[in-house]
Length: 229
Image 1 (cartoon, rainbow, N blue to C red):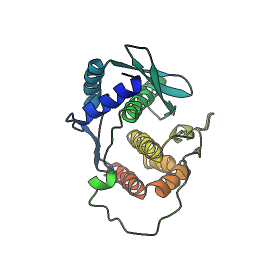
Image 2 (cartoon, rainbow, N blue to C red):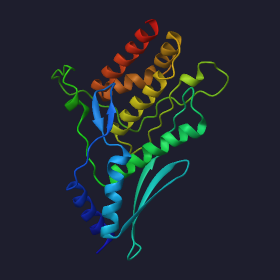
Image 3 (cartoon, rainbow, N blue to C red):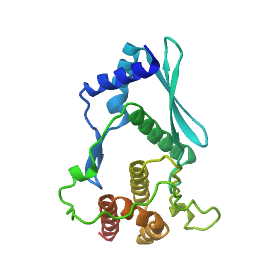
Image 4 (cartoon, helix red, strand yellow):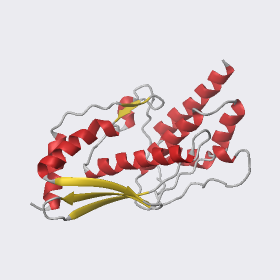
């Protein structure tokens, strides 16, 4: 049996497995799969069909190499690296967060794990039917972190999107990184800096996914109200 056939069998076996989503995005109101929800199932299935998956990283890419333990043939799933640079987090913590995201996305891609669109879990958001709007392509690169001694520099989000990165992955990363930033704010000035210095990113988020943008703007308001209270 070839590595491709074994991987296909593993996907089918995983689809027959009952998995529960333990992750919850309270801001956008949807549940999602965390690594622990599917990795144990995948490892058991891989052992049964004769596959081994190993994730590795370098400065440009993260890779998941799936090897047929019988004949040594390999399938490689690749994802461009991204960076997280936020106030209050050590470099190793930022690196660990990025690697966790990459592992999750690589395994979901390899095993064709599908999650419901966040609209399914957001009945409180009114969705108006409009004519299709032009979409931005995923080849653009939002502003990089400005280096230097600028006291506002740590509020810049650095989100890189190389060709091949899906819009859904980019949106998810922007939302999660912004959540981390809002968790670190200590004043209304911090909130304003986080918003204004990344306005280009949030404008693109609105063009790509209006529902996620609306939910994220509500979180900015809630963070400001919390400081006032």
